[in-house]
Amino acid sequence: MTQNYFSEEHNLFREGFRNFLATEVVPHLDEWERTGTIDKSIWQKFGEMGYFGIRYPEKYGGMDLDIFYLVIWLEEMQRINSGGFAAAMWAHNYLAMTHLLKEGSEEIKQKYLTASISGEMIGCLCITEPFGGSDVGAMKTTAIKNGDSYVLNGSKTFITNGVYSDYLIVIAKTETDPKSKAMGVFLVDRDTPGVSASKLDKLGWRASDTGEIAFDNVTIPATNLMGEEGKGFYYVMQHFALERLIMGINAHARAEYAIEYTLQYMSERIAFGKSLNKFQALRHRMAEMATEVEVIKIFNYQVAQNLDSGGYVVKEACMSKLQATRVADQVIYDCLQFLGGYGYMEEYPLARMLRDSRLGPIGGGTSEILREIIAKMLIEKKEYKTAV
Image 1: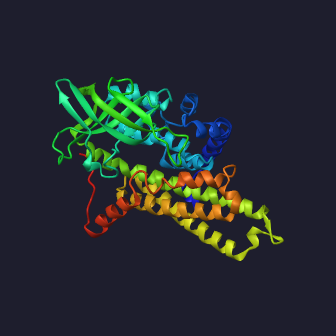
Image 2: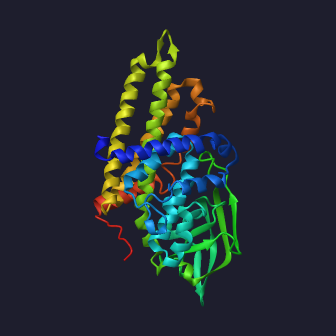
Image 3: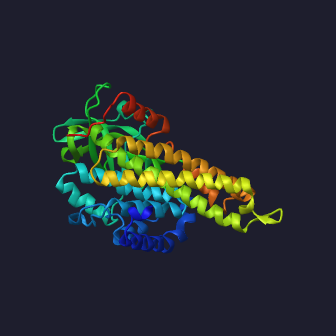
């Protein structure tokens, strides 16, 4: 069924990107996983190859390609088995840079978007707060206008690329009333006085730098407001659909890779005089897992196609992340079990994959939050309006 979505050009792109990752990234992954620091040069290599410009306009150095090039980009990065590396790349490319493109002024785009596409600058998106979690409306960080400037105060946490990025896209309230949802989207340079960050120690995604960031009377020019003041909440909500679909695609891709690896292992591992793939209990569970992954993959492809056509896919994107991350967690858990004691060893890929996969149902909106969003749309006919 995938031929309905991928052309020969797509397939050639996949082959080229897979070779690029094997040559430029895979040899360094274990070191980056150990140190939690990705070498800056790899960002520039991604930029030189155009891999940060897939979905961006040519006028800023992009290639303006369709969404299935992005799908391939995401799927292939899951195959190299470093959720942290993949997250660092897509958090830059499709969280921070999306706001630059959609809300940034032309001056901001020329300076920051072009440098982000070339890999010269790295960005991060700062939404989540220590006591807010998935509740964006409970945000406490403020950006209060003072003449020709805004003054930011507050903190953010669980921010991918939060320590080593060059700029931060910060969502902050523009009013001091705690009940207000008036927010703004602000661009903040890393070296602005009053910005500080500390790295968090995580269960998985170890190659990425996940940080807690503090803003202490950080003064930025009023021109660093992106979009309209007060509409930041709506900008965030409309971009969440892409983030959640990305996480759904990531999930089906890593589950598919786990099955592929485990099938190879089962064909080679002998127990009681026969290979593991001859045991009915294992064969039938593998058949179930492959079916579940294929179903969510085709669903994700259809949602991606609808999004690319301008469709309203908030509900479907939530469903994608909810179901795909649940399936991926279970599939990877079972694949590790199929490897027995070897699955528990760090030299085999399933241990890292299990840790990395566990963030799927948490990051970008927990499964509990997604269930409530879907329920509101189904039962109460709620629509999450875009900013106008």
